Amino acid sequence: MLLKRASDIRSSEITPEAVYRSRREFLQTAAAGALGAYAGASLLSDDLWAQAAIAGVKKSPLSTTEATHTWEQVTQYNNFYEFGTQKSDPARYAAQLKVKPWTVKVDGLVTKPADYALEDLIKPHQLEERIYRFRCVEAWSAVIPWVGVSLADLIKRVQPQGKAAYVAFTTLQRPSEMPGQRTSSLDWPYVEGLRMDEAMHPLTILATGIFGKELPNQNGAPIRLVVPWKYGFKSIKSIVRISFVEKMPPTSWNIANAAEYGFYSNVNPMVDHPRWSQSRETRLGSFVKNKPTLMFNGYADQVSKLYDGMDLKKFY
Ligand code: MTE
Image (cartoon, rainbow, N blue to C red):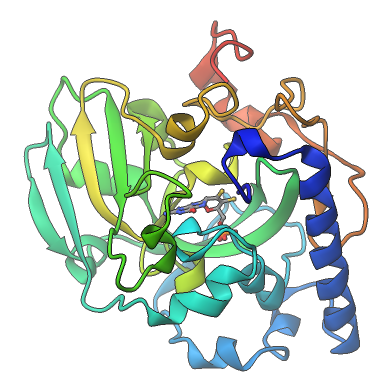
């Protein structure tokens, strides 16, 4: 997300980096002759071939038909503060993280709490390819082919109790393998949360892969949240705990700067970030911030009813 504590940085410092990176990636991609659909991306990178393929993935009718970005674009320009605050840090440093074996604790107001081995958490559910628009709060966007399972299916299986109104998520805390956690760029561990109806929405997934392959570490291996109508920072990476709670849980960017980052963080072109407009965005691979941002990132038909009667300026 931001390079320093949010309060220390001007928007003019952010967009140029995004544009610069996008331009560089565009040129690399163009040079390799692999623009557009992700079949082309596989020609680009040895890393893609090194990642294990995921079997048994079904295509989802919830996917957008827009062309995806490339493997290179999606895996080399990341926000993952556990590995540093620069966009290139995750790709550079995340390989040292051991993601196997991996356990996810499910606890709180739930009938079937347990420490689930990742395989046991995922196996009962249908893996789907979900091609979603992704919008970072810093006003860059991308189209990403995730592989994941419906969070709603998983929630139904573990059976939350009636009082559970929110779902809280926690990222791994392992400073020995996550150098950013040896700094105070954020309070650790990274935490996020959703209201129960948001967590149960059919668009919300827990992703274990991209481009048909296991997630690379920099993208949040081995399991991360994806909520396509919200700004990217809600999509918490490398999850080790899912808790069912009664009260709205704390979230990392809200803790860091409550005036700028709220709990809901729905993509909304009418509600600007205090330091920059959200009405337009820069598509990775483009040079300019000229793409109109869509309400709820283009998912308004599916999700706007979740917020009926809410003042979205107040609940940002
Ligand atoms: N999850 C953790 N644990 N740590 C982070 O720093 N960054 C968030 C989100 N999830 C972050 C995180 C932000 S700001 C964004 S935009 C997305 O991850 C970026 O996901 P990507 O790198 O796969 O594009």
